[in-house]
Length: 476
Image: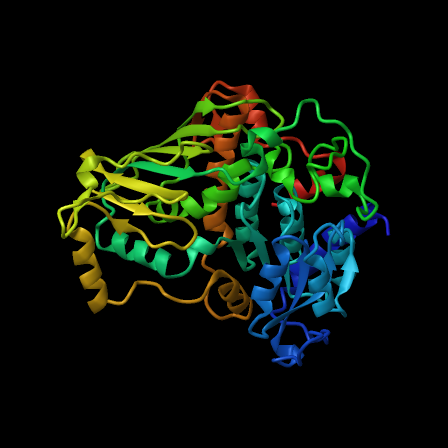
């Protein structure tokens, strides 16, 4: 089927959906898992269209379906053979229809699906998500929400315009660790934070000097299983194919991914950014960019961001992000404690984490990543806080980000990390990647959402999409 025709039909269906309103559940009879009987009748299950089936996707799909309230009826991938774990998903749900192009899938099946799951490379999150939202379909998208600043801005507008359930997949935004941080904030233990350190040790290919390729990259032969390299590139530049891009290492390239900041930043800076209402920074500075180029991310990078004051007990925060070698913070000696035997005990910083400091280093809060719980270091406040928690329940509690999405789609409760939360976090990371790319200091105006005095940086906020994808950027 011609993708131009499919795109036009999607936009036509959008108009119809606007008049008719969205359905909560369809009565479409789904295909049961091959290894068990359905746990719920079809009228009580969400029909999922899963865009992206390999890599991280199988875990996401299984987690969404584990309670029997959801089931895939459509799989979309440009390469069903790229990752070994794809075969297991296809075998588990053999009756789900398969497509290479999500536009054709939405054209053919939008009446039969209730929600859309997007687990593709970062640069194609936006187009799949906005197309589904325009059809009034709830959308789950893995972090980071988008590749660019403007794409996140559009998705926040779309969330309001179309009124659909949204969720950015972010493990750290649910669970006891997040609940604990919420309790700390509610009890005033995070008042007057003025400084934040965030870090991640090397774990991606471009942070290994021996794996960093020479430039320019040489063109590689296309794998036979890849249905379309043009389609894989989506709205971004159609660069010559290289085996580093597909199926996984795309994350290290500016054109298609967001590096370590985009990959792990969501797990590390999410708590304070949301609960301390940090918003957008006004200054972003590239402090150190080892082996810098404008094709793939640095060997190691250090960035600083200045977030302005937000009102009472919320002074300005200066954040330093470090990834790569030698990135763990040096914890000041004043936060060491003494053990029972008189031995000096130094708090241990994990390979990924954050450290929040109060005004004049009056206190410090250390945590790891994902759902790790934060704790006060170097004074008696942590033990006092723990005693209070024994008497008072945590302020949130509730479902993980998979279960909360399914429940919200069925009219029960709200999601933990809707686009109104996830997009703002993604925008912070997008601003950081622009500073990394340009290797410079930037001044940003949150009101106008533009850089001050840097036209090149402003272009990178919203790089032009390829012509066949331009309409998606005008949907909201």
